[in-house]
Image 1: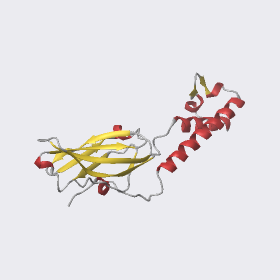
Image 2: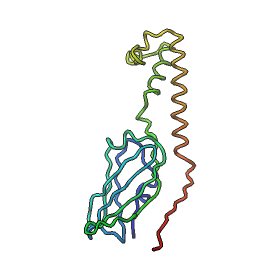
Image 3: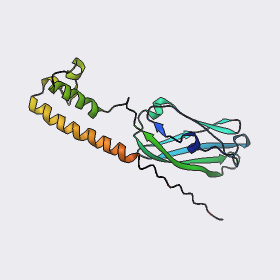
Image 4: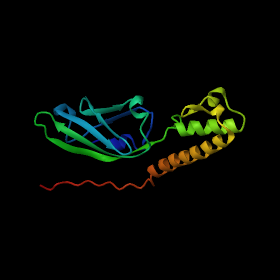
Length: 181
């Protein structure tokens, strides 16, 4: 029985986690000269080649490969190629959901936290020296801090809304079109 990528990653992937999945295709065993390649397209585009392991293919993406992935839905297609003839066939397809990693924060989030801490009088030295452009927060006027706080609030809200929308409703429709010839 084939083991597809969706079977291995049913809960999705959190940005910054290592992806490790083993896929098998009954009709395309690795030991008979097939190679495997996956293309992912969503908010970002990335690829992974399967490493042959007996009759399976092992797909691996390290932390460094996934840490900068933007959250969202990624359509993927798994292609197998028979090395001897070069014939390439789609063996797998679906959707991978990449979730935001709370440990990986953006500059708008950092700046907003620093500005709010400075306004409330509880900023650390690191927060005081956060720079926007060529000026440190500690040297900004109160009106500039309030203006930048409003700006970064909007940026963070937009990031959160994008992440929320990209995770979708969870209702997926999978289709596969096959040429009858």
